[in-house]
Image (cartoon, rainbow, N blue to C red; front, side, top):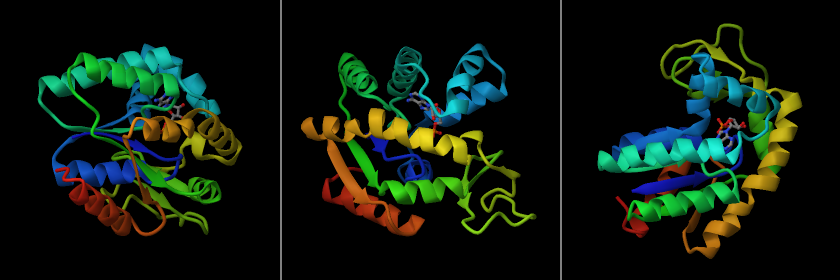
Length: 218
Ligand code: AMP
C-alpha cells in the first residue's frame, strides 16, 4: 500500500497514520516530524527548515522532493508499504511524487482526505499539545492542566511553536492556498477518497478501515 494522507493541519492525519502503520504493518513518513528531528539535531537541513517552519510557511519544494525521492526508493528497496503524512503539500510536490513512483514502476494506491472544516481545524490547533518523546498529540480546549503528561508514553508535552495563535492563521492560509488544491488534483487522477474527520479517533479509524475493505486494500 502506498498511501497519501490529506487534510488540513489538525485534521488528525498524524494520529491516524500512527494507527494505520501499526494495523497494516507499514511505514509512516511524516515530513513535519522528520524536519523537527533535523532541527533538534541542528543539522544543515534543520537550520534551513526552521526559518520557514517558525513562520508557518512551507519549506521549498526542491528540498522536500529530494528528501521524498530518497525515502520512497528506500521503502521500495525494502518492499515496504508506506503512508505519507504531510507530503505532498503543493501541486508541484504531488506531480513530483507521481513522477518518482512512475520511475520506480509502482503506483499510488490512494490519496485519502480526512475531511474537517476550517473553523474546526483552528479550534483543534490552538488547543493542541504534542509529546516531546513520541509526537502523540492531545487537545486541551479549556487549558492544559499543570501536571499533564503524554497519555501514550508518559513523556513531557509541549505546544509546538507553530501551534501558537500568531502562526496558526498563517498556516491555515498556506494550507488553503497551496495544499487544498491537491484535493482536486488527486480527484482528477481518480485517486481521491475521503472520510468524515469529525468524531473520536476510533470512529475515524473505523471509517478508514471500512473504506479500505470496500476497496479491497490490505
Ligand atoms: P506538519 O507537522 O505536517 O504540520 O509540518 C510542520 C511544518 O513543516 C509545516 O508547516 C512546514 O513548514 C513544514 N513541512 C512539512 N512537510 C512539508 C512539505 N511537504 N512541504 C513543505 N513544508 C513542509
